[in-house]
Image 1 (cartoon, rainbow, N blue to C red):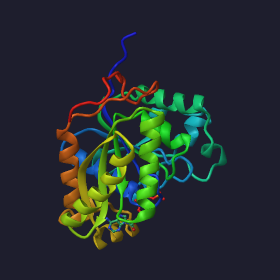
Image 2: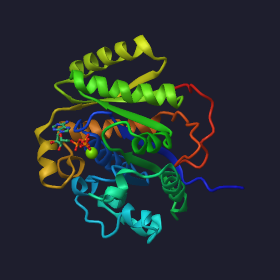
Image 3: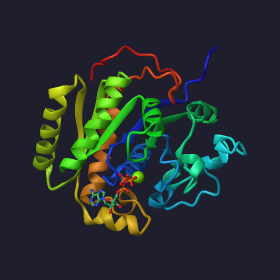
Length: 274
Ligand SMILES: Nc1ncnc2c1ncn2[C@@H]1O[C@H](COP(=O)(O)OP(=O)(O)OP(=O)(O)O)[C@@H](O)[C@H]1O
Ligand SMILES: [Mg+2]
């Protein structure tokens, strides 16, 4: 059965810990990739408490909740955001969304292949934690960004996230974004400390792909519902997002062995050179 390749790359943004910047990184990365001429769809897979639409400043009339209720197809609930980035928003505050069955998740992931237009990148913003909802959407991607900040609780949760993806699900390559850094030296230090913990116990490959500075402009952009990449392209964080997008776009993705994948051609050798 010849399936049409829809997404060249599906990038999960995850962290274990809540509140470390996943949604802001997802939204600004999606916009920076689109600005660079790519076709990007953002999927807010924080299905029960979705907020990417708020950060992005769009108000979707329909969401994934309508797809789950089997009232709509995934293409019906895709809305156009700034620069033409497409957004598939999760639902909000619905109990049935917090406990999706494996079958339901599989059908959501497969339904992304129904999207009519080809797309260069799918960016998947995940919920906090490492429950099955998060892990399955992450594994369906062929690149995994783990967001880390320089505090012990974030290290523990990011480590737990990498451990379960690596040990239970065979994922080897992880892109690390260090958020809220003072400067690049601080980011390098956080990465080094985090990597030394992971290296002690796991055979995972961590790639330090970006530092995002602590930036009051980013914080302000959240209250204005206008992402910093658009509202203030000269801000430190905006420049870092553009750099992250270029880095992502220039590197080869590490493929996934998951049975359900957003990318229509998931087969790969394990490991993967970068
Ligand atoms: N680089 C940064 N500079 C300044 N503030 C930041 C930065 N990154 C994140 N923040 C602040 O942290 C808040 C939380 O970020 P965000 O919502 O993106 O986190 P999250 O990981 O998606 O959270 P959740 O786990 O709840 O989904 C932002 O609203 C912003 O105020
Ligand atoms: Mg979030």
